[in-house]
Length: 348
Image (tube, rainbow, N blue to C red; front, side, top):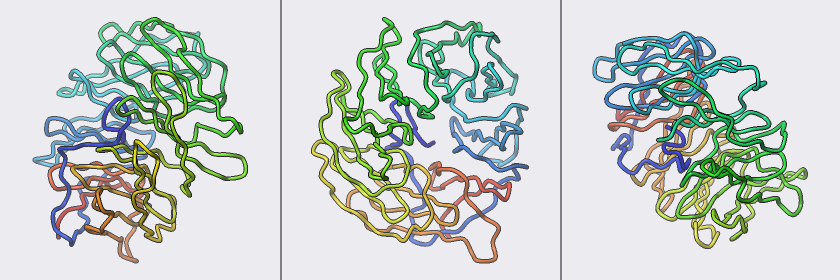
């Protein structure tokens, strides 16, 4: 689920989690290895990963594995395929019904891909350390779109809107028009802070990202998507997660709190200290509820007020150690764990 859309908002307005205030964790399936990416749900099927071992498709009604693929990675569903796995310089996908494997053309021009692939209406976008590439989803043929400054750091999941790719690199945040193609603008923080620890999100013409400095100061930045000009900057005490944007509010979680920031002004609307203790995974928002996950706990808070809706904490004797952001669907929260199990958090 994580980013939900190509804009990386991490907002799913129609998904519903558990409705009660008491929840429990139920083992759904053995994943054989730790799933390190959030699962994806589409048309009654759940698509997950198992470390570096496999992709699997699970029927949510029967909770049986329908097929498995032998190359693992993040999952994104579009036009009847599950995209995401990468091996060397090849992009892989699987037919959602049969599990038949599709793969792109392999070539020598790319040293390695450095972002997760983005399946768009016009093909699949992916970045290497010095260029942006496009892949034809029918033929697997690749196209060199544009060179970018060589980098050793980049955001994992770029954001995409209106033919423009927003990607954080070592030298700043780039807005790259993939249709023209050209770099429309590059935003470089005045104090040389880094923009690669967090994935950008775009909503209503503004790009939101987090700036980290070498002296461990952090700011949530709002940048005009057309001009690249900074709209506002707000000091935050957040470790390293990416922003979620929903209904005019930006949400971030750190090891000590969950923070809601007004998307227009940068004003902190509310902050809730949860003694989160461990660095959380990326926040997701579903139907007015914020979900925050760490290795041992999951919180659900009202997105408008910050009030606690429910909390799950693993029992002391349990081997559960959650390993990715949650995915919310049909009054259930699905999350993988390092005990090689996919769990469903549901009403007790």
